[in-house]
Length: 357
Ligand SMILES: Nc1nc2c(ncn2[C@@H]2O[C@H](COP(=O)(O)OP(=O)(O)OP(=O)(O)O)[C@@H](O)[C@H]2O)c(=O)[nH]1
View 1 (cartoon, helix red, strand yellow):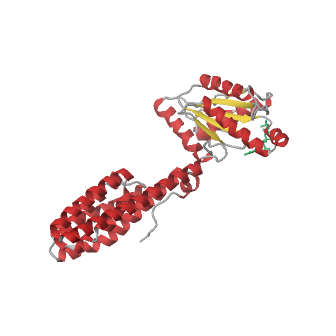
View 2 (cartoon, helix red, strand yellow):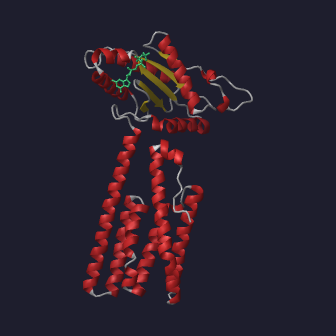
View 3 (tube, protein in one colour):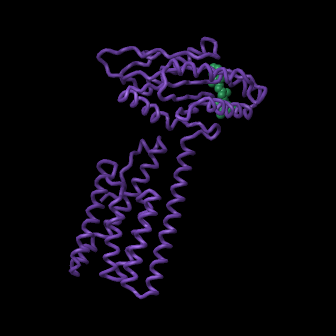
């Protein structure tokens, strides 16, 4: 049997958000896989001891595990988001402790820890509180008082350690995702999110007729700034530029740094006319006041509204052509991208680059 969990190698390589999702799926896959390996023999053991009800519950547990493993393998997703696991784990650990004593109790510890890796943190905490309470009640009925306290505290402590570990792993994941998706100098999004976010806007256009636009913005003669004022000053100009742009944008707009001195702004629910007005304002906000109090800077921009049927690369390419046009017309200006040429009898993916210029 192949132990490796299903992954999408390309997605892992290029998209940090998908990479995190992929690792979460691998974790779920391995947990279910090993839980199945551990629990399946117990079905027989309990059956031989005439514990038919417990055998039945363990069969349900194993069936659920097998289904989750199959779904992850075949579809890359799993149903009910792992929520059957806590239910079956609580019921089988409590019932097994009730009929088998300590032999059943031992299973509560790995089951309680696993919940923190299967469920969102809040749900895992809730499920674990229920788990500890149920096991405390069963222990109280089954064992001497001293054992009841030991069991309750040791199980509670196991849950606490697992919770702290899962919480720290979650925070680490968030931090790594942030580092992988943003540019360290300016805090803008980097190219890793570009295709996803543009594709999202294209979906909104195709399905709901919601129109988005994008602005490409490139500083003029930035090389001269670096040469004249030094690379560090150049860096500070870029940082200040990102701040100035952000000040003027909405929460829902997304600012990318897609090259050295090239930025892209995605404007959801914005027509070309409004995006063009915004681009002019941004250019004015750059040229009107010197950067770092001394450095005069201008920028060129292009504006492109998404057209029905085009791919994100065609959309971006149209904006790129218009930016080139803004540069060649003398810089410090914004140029609207040309509409894509209608292509009769061919798929949009087949459109030549020149069609967008
Ligand atoms: N300080 C600094 N400079 C950078 C960074 N990334 C790229 N650059 C510089 O940006 C400059 C870009 O130069 P060009 O591509 O010739 O563009 P430009 O001088 O702005 O000219 P036009 O775009 O044609 O107006 C190069 O000198 C790069 O070294 C960065 O992170 N910090």
